[in-house]
Length: 534
Image (cartoon, rainbow, N blue to C red; front, side, top):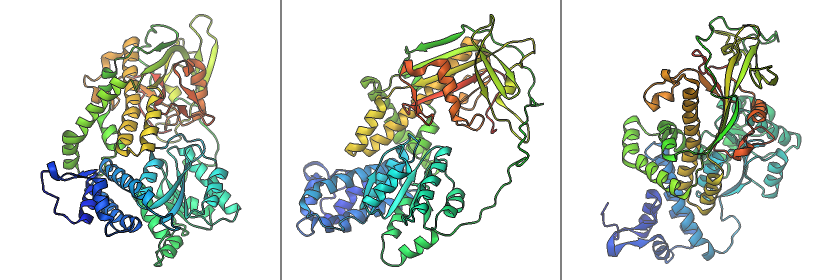
């Protein structure tokens, strides 16, 4: 800060701009714009040489700093935005030369998956490190992905997905490539993937190369090898064909095919059944956004969404207090003023019973009629839990109660993040996407507390909001797609009960909720109900 950089060689000035994510350099009268420094460099470099030697060398340093955990993702995106601006300035001055890019990759989020943040981060890193990226977007079927790879003569196909189901869709793409005798290397990434699945299961499906990339820079290193001419390409391709043997866990009770419906011995009857404030569904839109913000899980926001997880513990604490918490507060103020987030919920209460592994939902207490039936999986080992265990069974003499909820912060944030990504404002894109997703989670947490108050069971709540993130309250809320109730198709039953279309929330044909910044839940009051893996 305040250092006189005017005497630096022009190459070092440009690298300084990229590594520090700054579009100006110097102070006061000596301050120069990025474009002015580029013009000075063009005296001795052609535009293409400037990109390939000086600018890409700056991005290489950024990658090394990230790999050494000395730089966090938001700062990497600042650097990428400077790189994009520099290249955009130089491109009109370049003759279109074949081979001016290092290579081409076709990127897609696979069929049925609406999540694009991971794929777009790969796009940002690769496109600003010299690669041509054909970004097909979300929910892409295998034939579209393969056709694009053929059309663009891609050096590789990149497949992304957040959902467990997406790992199967990746397998279908690879099986189609094999069936068509195509040879595109495939790079797979996403939250639900494991190295074992890619390097063992997927490699068994393909006679060519499949790679696992756990972040955007891993994808960059693979692409660098695949486009090199010094032997690294063949070595990398050979590695991508090697099926790695991982220990295969035998599924508990696999093969007998018998699913137990016997209630878990560890779940006793609830001490009481709350009195419902009403039966049926209600819509609420009268939320104070600042109050909802107070329920944001900062650890989830900073470590998972803004990806500060690579920082050491001491660096993390310092970075959050000095840089990222102030950014969060400023963004919250901006979002509130522009009404980008619009909290809306629909929730409801209903009488219910359990029957084996089913939960039967009734329309009312008088002459009850079954309106929906949910079937949940049961653990085969250990406590042998099932969500149905937390409700009174048919014939018990007591009628139980259940809650349902769908919350959203609307679709304006999705439109704005799309605009930010396309305009090259990468860091703001990451910040706003993360804040909007975590605000939806905060709204779910806030509504769950309101539901406990309405049920008269909020007396067990921990006094601090941060303790609520660890289920320090009576009961639980379960969301479809998670381990205790993994069947996403059951969303259709919850939607039939609550009709969240009234608050602008819909289901895709693969049972994903749209807008992305939305979530649904089953609310259980039983004190023993906590998260478990079925």
